[in-house]
Length: 242
Image 1 (tube, rainbow, N blue to C red):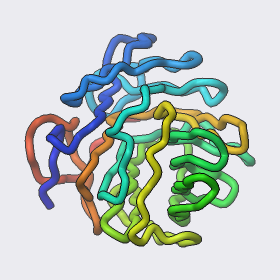
Image 2 (image 1 turned 90 degrees about the vertical axis):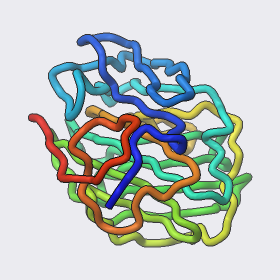
Image 3 (image 1 turned 90 degrees about the horizontal axis):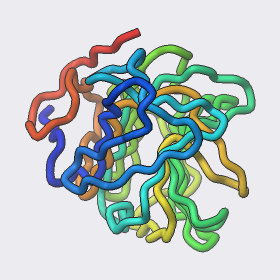
């Protein structure tokens, strides 16, 4: 399978490289978005898959934030969100936010992991009306292991992947031809807002990419062996570090 790297569809690309302890996160897409930090989120050079580091999130208050943009308005089009994630803790009763854009409990876009039922969830809601509700079943994450995860819309379908393998998705509200809402809120990485509360990722993120207007994958694939760049290349098995 041929996939793009940092191409015209790429709206945000965080390699999470830098010096240890740095709070500077650089968007390597053509947009060069300013990435804000909340809490003590920082670059950690001890853990990474590609490059010099990854983003370290402490599970208490850490996340990255980006200003609202038309690039986060997916509408009725295809999109792909993918990253590498490593969990430091998977305690009972915890939710781990991957990305979210939340106005309030009635208007939101959420992608997160629920430890208790072992599912990845994707929700989109517009003024109290759900536009999509999916759960990717049984990814069976364990701590201190790197995983590639992906959320993909392709037309009327939603796919979720772990390490290139499609998860069986349960559907409460099918996305169908629904238009996802244009949310006037910051886009956040490593956190989840729901019910007026925040839930934070406890672990690391590397190589986070948001792609608009393209479904990068719709069937099982092998994940890349290098950071996304301006090349177009064949996907190959992932190399990880402990």
